[in-house]
Structure formats: structure tokens, C-alpha cells
Image (cartoon, rainbow, N blue to C red):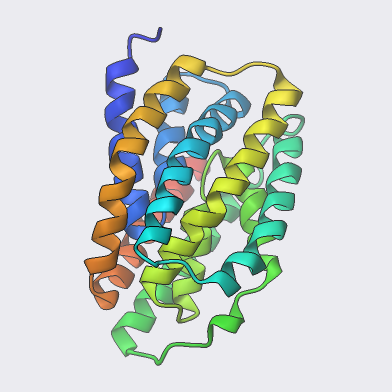
Amino acid sequence: MSPEFPWLIAVGFVAQLIDGCVGMGYGISSSAILAALGVPPAVTSATVHAAEVVTAGVSSVSHAWFRNIDRKIFFSLLVPGVIGGVLGASVLSHVPTRIIRPFVWAYLLVTSLVVLSRVILKHPPLSARAQGPALGGIAGFLDAIGGGGWGTIVTSTMIARGVAPRFAIGTSNAVDFFVALATSLTLWFQLGQMRYDMVVALLIGGAAAAPLAAWVTRHVPQRAAATAVGLVVFALGATGLFTTLT
């Protein structure tokens, strides 16, 4: 068992609380910790996604209980997201990721500015039909490549397009379960290794936080949630871009 086991439980709890409340952050924050511990990128992605299968499952059930899921958007993201995750996991197993990561962070910076500008300028919401398969496919691919980022990309994009934060967060978390499952299985089959002690630590903390996060999501005002999403994405994007370019 890893000596960092107790700390990783706390990491899983905090990461899932953030992810469940603003629809993003679990994979990115967890992957950052594992990377700091020296775990290889492919193994990091496999470990985080394996834990995320459980945490996202608990989170999606919680969001369904509080009626935070839009079925139309859910089904439009599901299959493309799974396919993108499988393709991204396959690429991660064979190709270095340092080339694509700067583009991912740059995209997140632009998206965060769109979200914040919508809040500041008070633009009216767009139709939920603006969501499409391309979003799920691209997000699933980048999520697998970066060891996380599904919620960061999908939630922020949906909110930027005008979807109510409550449904953007809940629906993103629900689809994330299936994307994480497909990604973790693909990496496991191709790599044949995983840090199971870290998986257990992350999922214990994440599963404990998921119901609380879903309850908070239902009661947070839309404007405040959208602002939080924009600020979180901006901070993550700026930090990630700076790190990859220096």
C-alpha cells in the first residue's frame, strides 16, 4: 500500500466535491497529484479513470436523484464521448502527450472567457439543442489523453452555450461514468498495469463526497455556479498552459 494512501483519500474527497459542485476538476486535480508522485502519464490516466468509474457512478446517481440531468443532452454526448475516450486511451498508450496538451489548455482559457463574458454581459441562454456529438467526441479524446478534463471541457462549453449550470453539471457527471469506464478498460487492456492502492484511496474519498456535491449543485444559484465554473477553468487553463510552455 502506498504511504500516501490517507492523503489520496483526502485528495479524492476534495476533487470529487469540486467536480460535483462545478462539474469539473476531479480528473485534472487527481492526475496532477499522481504526476507529482512520479507515476507515468498512461498509468496515471488508467488509475484516475478507474477511480472515476466509481465516483462518477455515485455522482450520476446523486444528480439523477436531484433531477439535475437533461436526457436529450445526455444521449447526444454518450456514444461520441465513449468513442473519443477509447481513441484517446489508445493514442496515450503509444504517443507522447506533451505536444497536444498546450492546445487543450489554450482551449480551456478561451472557453473560460466565454463563460465569464456570458455572466458579465447577461446574455440570454441558448437552446440546449446547441449540444452535439462533436463535443462529446473531442472531450472524451482529450480527457483520456490528459488523464482528466471531461467535465472541464464539457461543462464549461455547455454553460458557455447557455445551458443552465445545474443541468450542465449533472449531465456531464452522468456521461462521465461511461467515458471513464471505457477509457480505464482500454488502458488496462493495453498497459496491463494499474496502481490499485491509489485507485482505492481516490474512490473512497470521491464516493464520500459525491452525494454532498450533488445536493450543493441543486441549491447554488445559476449565476454563481457559472461564475465559479469560469474562474476554475481560467485558473486551470492558465496554470496548465504556463506549466507546459516553461
